[in-house]
Image (cartoon, rainbow, N blue to C red; front, side, top):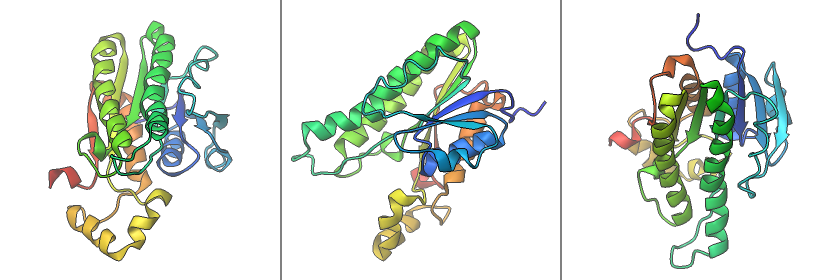
Length: 241
């Protein structure tokens, strides 16, 4: 039996309409999973690239948006990928921007995971993969809410693993490095910024969404059954510098 296969399993991937979330959903489909592609905008393009998939509209501006879906059917894998960012000097950062980021990036991650666990714990099996960030370890600049939320995701990953590991649920996270997506177009188009970033990355290249996606498949598979509470940096060596 292939320990990296997700055949016969159902995976819910949030933020699957674009970027890293889309790549994760497609990779899980290729590994054999039926994939529920969730996003606040259409996931039709993602679903079209997967043999067995469906779309679900979820907007985590309401952090409780996904809490009712796990009672309807068994979902074996949860990927908490949906996230937003707001930028401003910390001295000017607004309460509304703070609340918006924390609600989507942290509060929704906890309550979606909680709802998943309530359904999965009686079965004694389940995999949660959270998407953290290099800013789970570093401070960044002009992104106080995002940094706080991603530090929080790393902490949640550990506390939930501590509580659920012995009960059959694996909780882990991925901290992506600099990935070539539409979110980083401006950085890559700036010759000075692009050069500075590449100089810091030992691998000498920007990451690709598939670099994150294949790691997510691994953490969701039986090959990772003894991995709990880990935040895996997939960053081309950025954190090693």
